[in-house]
Length: 232
Image (cartoon, rainbow, N blue to C red; front, side, top):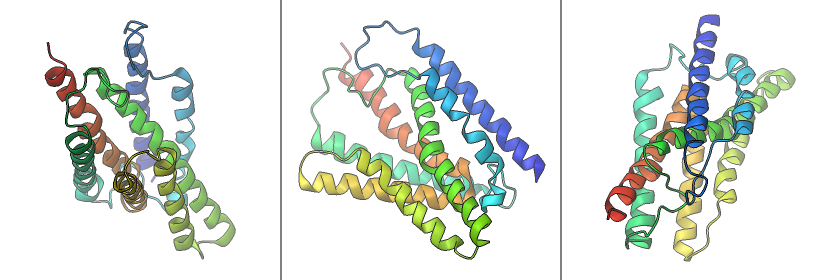
C-alpha cells in the first residue's frame, strides 16, 4: 500500500515538473503576444495542496493513481475515449456549426502550439485537483471518520453532483437556447463522469478524461486555426 502511495506521489511530482517547465516556457513569449495565457507561480504553489489528498486516497475509499486492482482499460483507454468524444462534440458544435468562418487571430481558448500542450496540461491538472481530488476526497474522508461509511454512497453522489455543477455554472454561456442547453448538459455530464472515474479508477483516469478533451478542443483545434486558417 505504501509503495502505491509513494508511486502516486512521484507521478504527481513529475506532473508538477511539467507545470514548472511550462511556467518558464511562457516567460519567453513577448509581453504583447495577444490573448496569451500564462501559468502563474501562485498556481504552482496551490497544486502542492494535492499531495496530502493523494496520500489519503485509500482512507477515503478511492484508488491510488496506480492501483493494481484497476485494469488499464478503466484507468486509461475508456477515460481517453470519453474525453475524445466530448472534444469532438465541442468542435462540431462550436467550430463547425457556430463559427465555420476562419478566425482572424487565435481566440483566448486557443494558444500557440506547441506551448499549448504544456499550458493545457497544467490547466487540466489544476482543475482536476480542485474540482475533483480535493473536494471528493475530503467529503468521503469526513464521512468515513464521522459516519464510519454508513452514508458513503450518499456522500459520494452528493459531492459528485455538486462538483459536476461547478464548471458549467462558472462557464455559463450566452447565445441561442440550444447552445446554452448543450453547453450546460455536456459540461455537467463530462464532469460527472470524471467524478465517477475518480471513484472507480483513480485520479489518473479523471485527469486523462480532461486531457483527451483538451487534446482535441484546445490543442489540435489550435493547430488547425494557427497553421491553416491563419496561415499567410
